[in-house]
Length: 307
Image 1: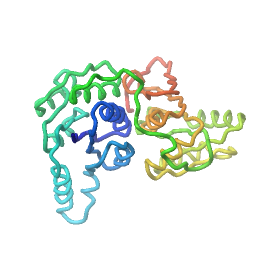
Image 2: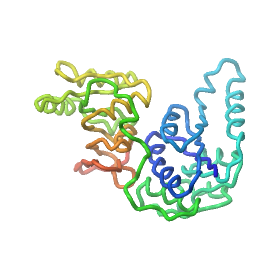
Image 3: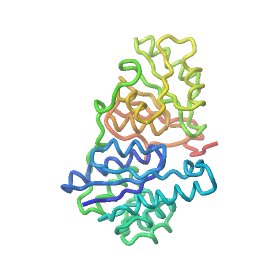
């Protein structure tokens, strides 16, 4: 049996889908998956042993191709890859207009959330098979429930198994550091540099080294500001998700803001303290063994505001 997963972004959402793949593979012998994902996240599905093929959707990359036809060529190539196989089931695990359009173009029976369950309810019109999933469950539990409904087995209530193992990634950087995941896409989720520096001093006093991964200009500047003048605190470039996974897998522990790499730490069962300010961990927080959440007590939190 072959199934296509449509879960295109973000890093955390893609990682949240991995336990459902593990559940399904355990329930059904010989089950294999292909996965549609946006460019920049394509490393993640390939980490799971039951995913055979990753189909990359790269709208921004296609637009950068030379000539006026670059976008058309990119869309054509993607469409050809998407249509190359006929699937026993196509699961839209995202429930958004963009993911529904991708699922609609794929070959095979379409499955997705029903009207009350989807974030964008009208997408249910595009599915032949609609499934009800409680909206008040954690995102990981919702995807696990959806896969179970589509493929016909009882949804497990156990802790999620992401199908990833720490020893499957080559260690990057110093041995067993404390890793600070300081970067995030929302400015409101950032923790002040002065607080990171204070925590780094406490780590140094405890005899720990600190690694500060970065992969962009803003992250690099913040990592350097945190590390300035502090012995044993090192910014480390992680240009790929696999490099970041290697650094996290080799860590003695992680402190993270609400960021996709925090979910990667949870997937690898690395002890992690995650900091929540404008967001809440109830429905989309890190989930797994060794996870602790510190939630802001300020009167305005959680405001769920990017600004």
